[in-house]
Length: 62
Ligand SMILES: [Zn+2]
Image (cartoon, rainbow, N blue to C red; front, side):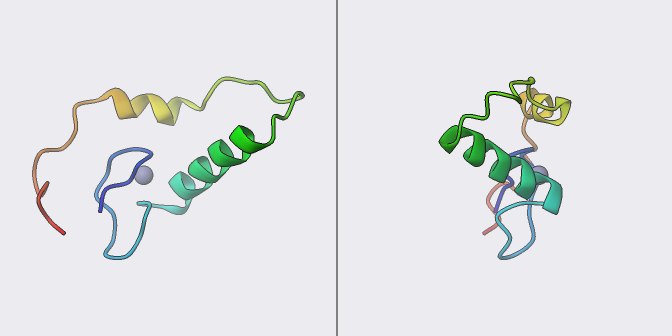
């Protein structure tokens, strides 16, 4: 699979490459469901890395 946060290849049954990305996704979901008015800060810089060209190698791996 491919990490939806940073685009890295993940472990076999993992949805995310790391706990960090899992937390990022969770926080996104959480903020999407519950608008927290006291924390409207911009996304962490790590998300910007998603703008980088995707890794084409091992793209077809299950
Ligand atoms: Zn990731």
